Length: 295
Image 1 (tube, rainbow, N blue to C red):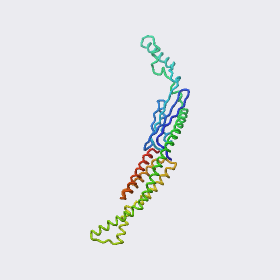
Image 2 (tube, helix red, strand yellow):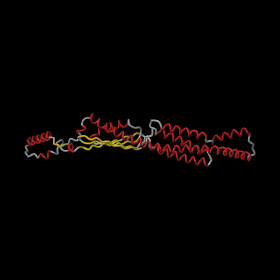
Image 3 (cartoon, rainbow, N blue to C red):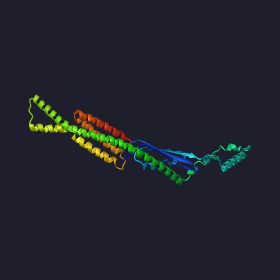
Image 4 (cartoon, helix red, strand yellow):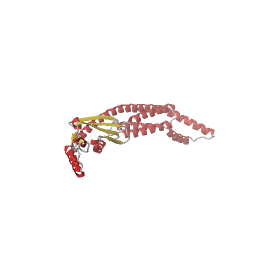
């Protein structure tokens, strides 16, 4: 299945205490990598996000970003009267102890720790409820993200199949050309060997000459490379239609095809075949560029 490693999505949910937003974005990466940017109130949930995302995809670099927009009523400051009274009583007792009596400015006590605070985070105080909220949002974002990656994968598939079809056409043309070129190459080789032997004052034994000629011909015959390339193309298409992540598998098959084309190119001296081999390498490079984006 063609699935792109790149994608983006966003999900939000609103409550009385505020709104939570979760964003997923991903780019190409050789392995699976996850990073999370969370607000302070959700910092302890980072391992949870990692664990959930690990099960949702194969490879790629995924970034998770969460934001909380708090409601005005939650952000409004409130005075902890118990804390304020405790500070007042403590200061009064301290004044009595040291024999100093001054009027205590209540407004100055408001800066002491714990006197003034907000209700921020109160909507996420229960772990079970928080997990339900986060999982609902992450599931929604992941579904949208996967839809985008699938759509991009279909675009990649069409592009890759066009290049594979072009490669197959080139191989067919090479095979047709080779039917003519190999006979000419064999005749040329026979003539050159005969002239070389004649110049040396030697005469080749017919059976021995035939054996050597066949041995030499095997070294420049490209029939096996063409057969393996067509087999690789068949395997490439079969792999692309499977339901598993295919990026790495297709990349390996392209490497094997490129190796066969290089061998084919080096074995033949026919200019037309060699030029078509260059075009085949170009088609394979275009395939390779596209499949680098696949999971």
